[in-house]
Amino acid sequence: MIDLHCHTKISDNSMTTEEVLKIAAARGVTHLAITDHDTTIGLREAERLGRVYGVEVIPGIEISAYDHRRKSRAHILGFFVTQGHEAIDKLCGSLREERHQTSFQMVQQIMAAGYNITWEEVIEYASGGTGVYKQHIMHALLDKGYTDRIYGELYKTLFYRGSETRAPGIAFVPITYVDVKNAILAIKDAGGIPVLAHPGQFNSFDAVEEWVEAGLEGIEVEHPLHSHEDKTKALELADRLNLVKTGGSDFHGFYSDADTSIGDYVTKVEWYEELKKRKTRLEV
Image 1 (cartoon, rainbow, N blue to C red):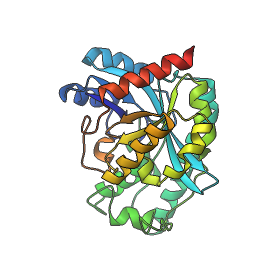
Image 2: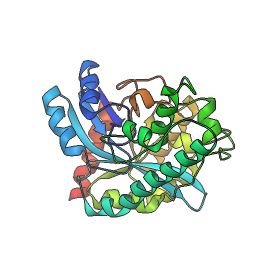
Image 3: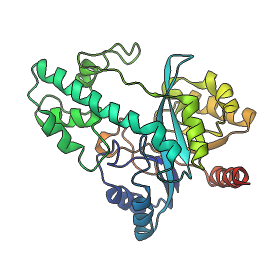
Image 4: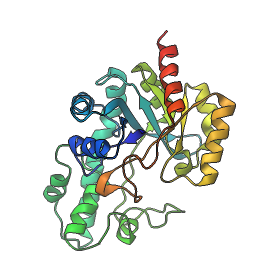
């Protein structure tokens, strides 16, 4: 099985890279893309551990981006990227720092609202990673008994009041995400193949043709949050615009917002072969 979307504790998975690879091996996954948010820091270690557990690790990234024209978020996956490449570090370094500082501000607002947590407690949940995410804040609140799940009513109260309106919650602090076209270019500069992640989540189908002109090479079809309609739209765009197709579980361990595990959503073998061919052609 080939799963081309998976995170580790380096970003916002509750599990370490080794724990992730143990699960992948146990579930029969032969190829796993490690696509931590906005960083390639853990890729060499992931590749080493992959050899230990008999799983081929595809070095990847998922860049948190923004479409300024449509005023909506977008995530861009990059496959076969070079770890530590200057283009990615330059683009994403300030984003990682801003996310961490924004999380600090959100924790202060949560404390001011009467919740008994501290910044020091929250940091512990993010140890070994690149910074604090909302999931780490929620984990601290869960362990203090304020909620029984990471994603639920408390998450909405604090961060987004409504999933449809995305109205800000009482602790919401905005982040300045990188421009989506710059994300595409940075991945290509780092030798990678840029692929639009879960277009159904942010309803970014109408932007795909424009982003292809900017260098987008693929689109994620199989994803836990994709409906049948989303998959159909993604397949139609892939065929019409000559995009490679991918699929993955988007696994976040205990922090996953869907009840899925590694290997539940996969990339077909023929899709993966086309991805590798695309990589070879771009290197020529």
